[in-house]
Amino acid sequence: MSQAHQANTAAPTLVAPGFTCGLDATLKIISGKWKPLILYFLLRGPTRYGELKRAVRDVSDKVLIQQLKELEADGVLRRNDYKEVPPRVDYTLTQLGQSLAQALEPLCTWGTENMAEMQKIFAERDSWLREKQA
Amino acid sequence: MSQAHQANTAAPTLVAPGFTCGLDATLKIISGKWKPLILYFLLRGPTRYGELKRAVRDVSDKVLIQQLKELEADGVLRRNDYKEVPPRVDYTLTQLGQSLAQALEPLCTWGTENMAEMQKIFAERDSWLREKQA
DNA sequence: CTTGGTACTTACCTAAAGGTGCATACTTGT
DNA sequence: ACAAGTATGCACCTTTAGGTAAGTACCAAG
Image 1 (cartoon, helix red, strand yellow):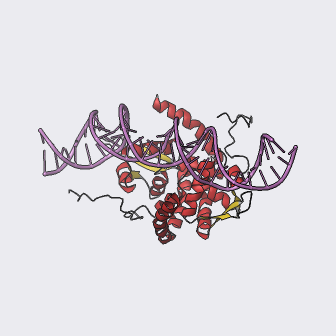
Image 2: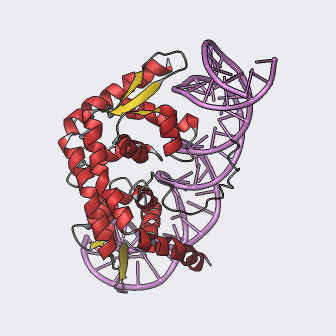
């Protein structure tokens, strides 16, 4: 019975025994408050930093830059520095990134299609939480 | 703090002006370390709490319960309490939840298909970060 | 009669994600 | 001359999501 205390030392088996499927791997990449938005937005094509920042509303410079770097390190996007004098930089999806961003589309669609439902739910959620907390 | 820029109609337009599409709404629901996994796993059908906990490896009771509650509040899953004496409870996707979970499949597929690439990348990432930090 | 399994709850704590604000180096517009 | 826009870097701070460890009520098995 005593299941040999498997040293659970973060053995990076990526695919956990049986269940987790590839979702795990994907989540490791898109987890970050703005990453999905960034990726999805980049589907529109090369985008300058400033555009991106204006598009992803309410993101701070620090975090935007940071997440862009991580996404770059993860090989889903590429940074293009034109080394011009007022800095000019833009970001593009790699092949990998494009397929990833496309995989996000159903989520976007779902959100759009259920927008109405969502609004109701987000309203109800408050009262629901309050009940439970009281 | 007061982003008084937009004195818009008090109605939170969910879809930010122009860009954000439904992805925003979706992200509000699936953001949570284990939520996508939970949803995706529930595609297999009604699942007891214990099963879920064993399936979603390394999640703690507190958080699992918590995320289940939130997902329930968000109307994507339903909790079934059989009110039996050793507690028996299971969780099922609602119609809404099912469509959401299905929208997650491409992500799962993507992760699976690019598993190899991911492994390389996760390895490289470390050295990449170290370089940049040094 | 102690242990284990069921499905939770609660109090407490920590790591990390994200936000704020300042600085940079250069150019264009007023 | 000075503000503004360009794309960042950095120090600092707050929030919070998530983890830990304990307890609950009940039953079955050893």
